[in-house]
Length: 81
Length: 115
Image 1 (cartoon, helix red, strand yellow):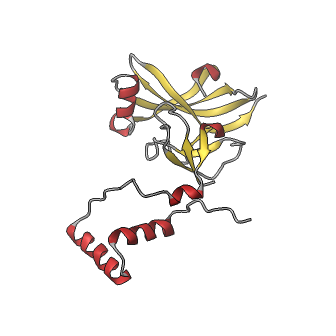
Image 2 (cartoon, one colour):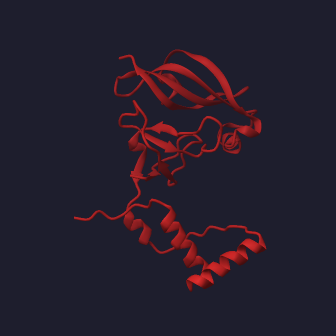
Image 3 (cartoon, helix red, strand yellow):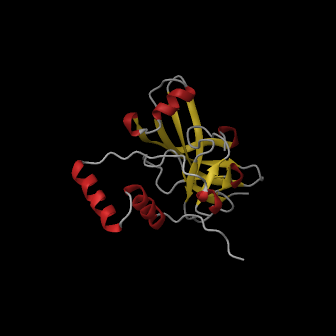
C-alpha cells in the first residue's frame, strides 16, 4: 500500500517505537536520509487495487524533515466497500 | 507454504532475494500473506505484516539440495563450543553435520510433493 491509498485522515495515531527502538533505523537512514526515526501506528480507511475499501490498522515510519514513509498493513478490521 | 522469497525491495521491510517466513493468517487477511519481515523484533511487528502474494515467489524444496555456498558464523563461549564438540563426537559427526541435522529437525522446511 501507499499513503495515496488512504482515504481521509489517519486516526488514533500513536508512537510505538523511537530511537533505538526502531531496529531498522540504519536502513531508514540509508534509504531516506538521516533522521530521528519514529515508528507509528494508526487506523485508516484504505482503498486497495482490487477496489475494496477496508478500515485498517497501518504502521509507518516518520522523521522530522523527511516525512512519512513505508506504510504497511497490520490488520484489516472491517470492510467498508 | 512456509517460506517465500521477496522478488524486489519494498521500503525497509522486504529485501530483494531475501527469504521470509509466512505466518498463520488472521481473519480478513484474504489472499494477502502475513510475513515476518525485516522489522521483526521491533515493537508492533509481532504477528507480522500483510503483503500481496505477488511480491514473493515460493521457496521450493529442490533449492535445499543446492551446493552449500552460504555460511553462518556463530560466536560461542569456549564451554558451549566444547559441549557442541562433545555432542558431535557422540554422534560421530562433524560439528557442521550435527548443526545441519539440528537445523533440518528444527525448521519446517519445504518438502517435495509426492505424486
